Length: 159
Ligand SMILES: [Mg+2]
Image 1 (cartoon, rainbow, N blue to C red):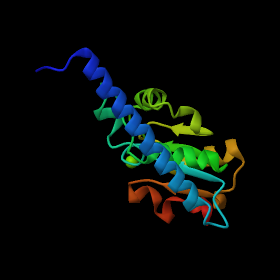
Image 2: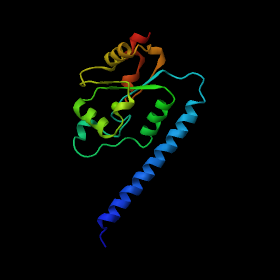
Image 3: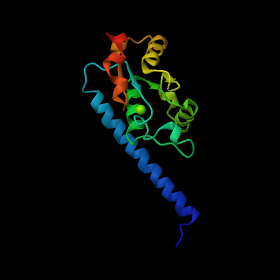
Image 4: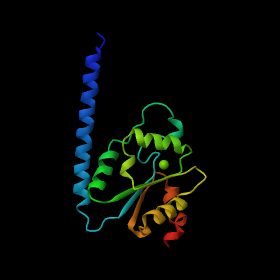
């Protein structure tokens, strides 16, 4: 028997409840982890594609975007603990990236967003983030799935 509209709605609602419960659990665990550190970064900078979400923006122009399951809970935990977050992304489609952040309801979690064309580089993004936030580089932590973006020779500004 095909599910009725009501059944579909209930399943959607159940999924949402489960998702929110999962986010809450991740957030609580992340808060406990953060509290084990005596020193924490003032700012955590995230890449987008394959760091916060499991796709390349340019490959997902249609449909609903999604985050990695733990991403939102962790971002919310960082906010609650007073640790700022920012984005440094070399997305080929910054418009899509911004639209996805909006749709996912996480845009306001970031103090600044450097989402530039792929011809820009992360080093430039960090200079802008540093200028706009006033936070020194040695108080920042950076997450990126692409090891090339995190190699120290790309960040001579830190040496
Ligand atoms: Mg990436």
